[in-house]
Image (cartoon, rainbow, N blue to C red; front, top):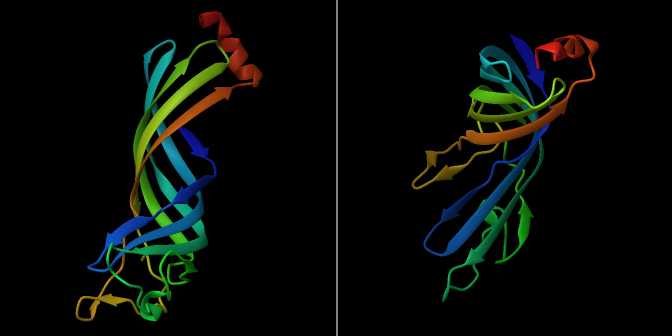
Length: 173
């Protein structure tokens, strides 16, 4: 059993198309995952692990860029954060904090007693609302809408242990 953490830069964007515009929304978060890993050995130099944990993040910025579809003219889009096509507009409607539950697995391969390479596919399920609580966003006849920013990631890690405790195991390699 081990505990892992780090820092992750995330672009939790999406693309939406309506009859007149293509909207590209980019929501940038910096988050810190905290995971509990359950290790199982396959052989002396190869392990796999199951991973469960939490991720908490902070919003850096949210930007919307939209483009008129061919043949359409620009219209006033103040109701959704903009006025003309091909502009980057800071929306300010997304939740400033991101919280999620992590689940994943990984493989770690020891090439020397102290050198390790890991690959870790993981899924993060958002547990808080995507929009800020003060944002009144509705679509299609007044239906409230809140996007979910779940994510799948493939993490690749390279490590080198400098701990003497690992060096003791070197004789097994």
